[in-house]
Amino acid sequence: MIRYIRWAAVACVVLLATLLVHTARLQLSRADELASNPANRRAAIARYAQPRGAILVDARPVTGSRDTKEQLRYERTYLNGPLYAPVTGFASQKYGTSFVERAEDALLAGEDPGLRTLPFWHELARTRPAGGGAATTIRAAMQEAAYAGLDGKRGAVAAIEPATGRILALVSSPSYDPGVLSGNGRTVTEAWERLNADPTRPMLNRAIRESYPPGSTFKIVTAAAALDAGVVTDVDAPTRTPDPYLLPGTRTRLPNAAKGCGHASMAEAIEWSCNTVMADIGVAIGLKGMTEAAERFGFNDDGLRVPSWVTRSNFDTDMSRDQLALSSIGQFNTKATPLQMAMVAAAVANGGTLKYPYLVDRTTDALGHTLRHGRQRTLHQAMKPSTALRLQRLMVKVVEEGTGRNAAIPGAVVGGKTGTAQHGVGNTGTPYAWFIAWAQAEDSAVPAAAVAVVVEDSRAVRADISGNDSAAPIARAVLEAALSG
Image 1: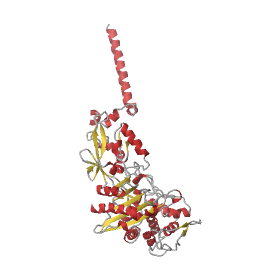
Image 2: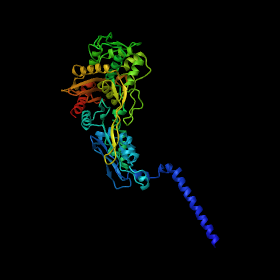
Image 3: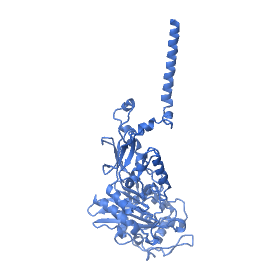
Image 4: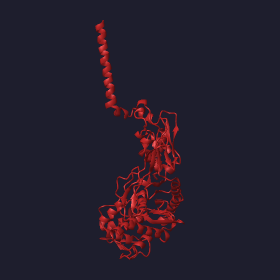
């Protein structure tokens, strides 16, 4: 009898050892596979078992969480959702996350290692820390001014603090309420399908994910390249550019919308937006010089993150001379996001130094203790300081005497540049209205903000589209909000 008991004991030990080995194998070698199995809902249940951390604007939350009392317990809520959608993005139980919700997902969901003050405690207790917070660089007054200025028209606004790179406003219109995507039910599916089928594309973040022909606003880049390279040494000297201008190697004549552009100086060409003069200057600089200048401003950069990825702004690196002429005035294949053109204005305002733009000022734990600060850094030296100083004067003259008078602000120095960008087959589409600008209080040593506005409202009468009429008033409102803060 004792022998049988021993055999049974040995069998039990073998079975127990086998079970332990199998359990260890599952936990060590197949844990990730099992955790990611679509049939395993434990990860999703744990993810939504507690409120998500807040995204903040001016130290106030613009997001929250709602207790549904369901298995996936907490859903995301948004305060002024359409206003801040280009900043926050959405956090959906069904469709994932976007923008800051995506870039700071680990922090907001309580999964960031920096939130674990006691090592291994949460692993042993099978809990997770409370979600942290992401304080953005956005200023509410500027965001509201940009959103109200666009007033539902298709377009975008991006504003930057030139000295630091902090993104102060990021607006895309028309917008949407990200709260309608928060859950996982039928209504969420219907909202997703409706938003994606909408021809106005409300979920497209036009400020950082759409690129447009920048039109005459790109002439600032061309002017910077000309001054840095010594192609132009006296901005007030007449050029030898006829009106109209014959594109090199072709029979195509490039006209001007403005009058008096024949043999105009570069200063006059910036002030009155003469295509002919700036196209000829671009050809004189040459493809290599123009490409290098554009890239110093951020063009052709595939790696820009703010922290969400930004669509590349394009300046072709292989062109004929006639194509280079058109590219130098923001046409042909030249494309730019509104954020990119705000960076152009910011580089001029900041003495030629282009700061890396960023959107998250700091991250915190649930108690508000700072974990990380947004890092200020230089992206490029876009131009010489002396060049920036001369361009500042030219841009101020655009606002005081030229095509951008609707951007003038009493008691402030404002520099700007208008643009009306042609697009569509044979340039038959309604032009995009552009305006880039920067503003500095008369008693301040540094500029308050730089801004880019694009309006692509196809409902407008073509003759009524211009940077000064359609975009400059929006830029002025945003800059006024910057100066008042």
